Image (cartoon, rainbow, N blue to C red; front, side):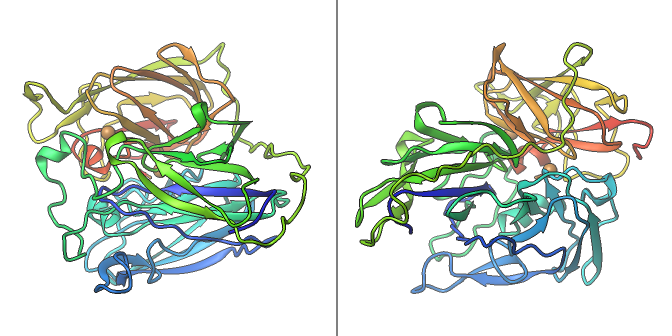
Length: 444
Ligand code: C2O
Ligand code: CU
Ligand code: CU
């Protein structure tokens, strides 16, 4: 990797599926590699997850690779992506974090009929926000994501971010059998009621990245710019589906290597990747003298004075004494258990008025952490257990720890039936999912 004093921006997507192994992809930026039209085939393929010596792992791929191709597009310009389904089952593609019309959101039965085996669908939208986003299926999600279907979607800023080099790290976790093939047993009822499917190396609830000898500055969360800040204790916490854009001044010593360590779980600490310096002289002797604050996107600012409050209580899961009595569902939101991946006719847990500001109060009454995700919007993260969250953080996915209440605020400006669910897919499909209906345009 680079040398001394390089300001390096890392755009990073964490994609969690529920099995362990980290994949890193590197992208060198040039002013723009954006393209506004893509064609992707979803199909079985193979990936060398366990190294060149061993038989490649059978996976499901976007465009033949895992993760799928990185789609780079320009902010504010129409995009068209043709998706062809070469699997022998239905699929859809969800553009996670993009504020787009409901019909392009990829939820089967709500946004669109599923793409049948051998069929195709053309996704067309104009991304309003620059940032780091990702795409994944919203049909048979547990298995399709768990077999490798995920990719990064980078919406480029109108003028390039002043950094020397840009890298993209996509972290996926896998559960592999000893022979290197993906373990079956998706949707195991016991796991669904507990932590969800956990991989061999990366835990599903999150990774905490600690940069040896370097001080990362977070400049965006879930694609949305925040006040640039060094994360608390130098540790960057990412739950499933979350992204962080960070800027690092590469001030290490020539010839040395520095580890980036994940120590979310102290007992499962491992080195995710190394920052290796070559012996060449530094690219520059002083840190790049450019502002690292990213230009703000056009997300509407909620009016907190007039905002209406809605409480959403996360319930269920395996507690000390056993499963809560909710039939086949293990989880619920406000007593309602929506299971699966989304389907027609889902009842709304709340109906919101188009254009109004809302505070959603997410209260976790369970013993497990839940990365709660809202489709079609970005929200301001206001507080955790009443303590204000600093640095103007916006997100589309927020980690709600056990016994925690997290307040988020947003303007309900996008009409439709929008999914709100835990991004631990096991939890989502076992009931930790709801629909927020915004405006009269909501179907179903
Ligand atoms: Cu990335 Cu419905 O989720
Ligand atoms: Cu989403
Ligand atoms: Cu969860």
